[in-house]
Image 1 (cartoon, rainbow, N blue to C red):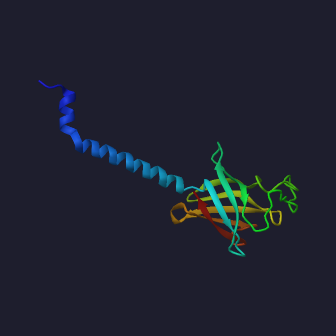
Image 2 (cartoon, rainbow, N blue to C red; image 1 turned 90 degrees about the vertical axis):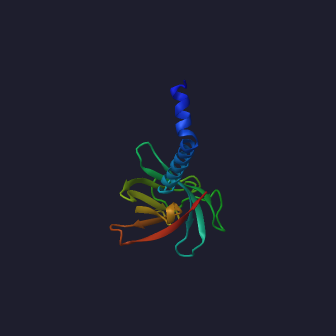
Length: 161
């Protein structure tokens, strides 16, 4: 007489193992998709006037679920590591741009992130901000504006792996 465990192995055998492996692979794909459905990660900013890469910004999520982004590398031809935000008027005045938080307090709002602010270190101005991911999470559309979203400009950033 065979035990219940032995009968279960025979009954499920290879089809059960294949199903288990397929389930694990599917779960891995869902996790990978979920990671690209968020702005969290490192992004290459593109200058909306010249179309050239400008900087790498790393966006992280804090314990409250808000997104914040800081400059981790300058990519401009004249970019110096010791460059400072001379045009800033808040606590960031004359602080190094490298390592500076330029995106703060972004909150999830449906498929978008909204309610936060973005700093343009070139002119020191602070704008309201909204953003959303596109192309399977490979592009991030960032809109800075004053007052209403119609009065602003957008940049499309590219995810870096």
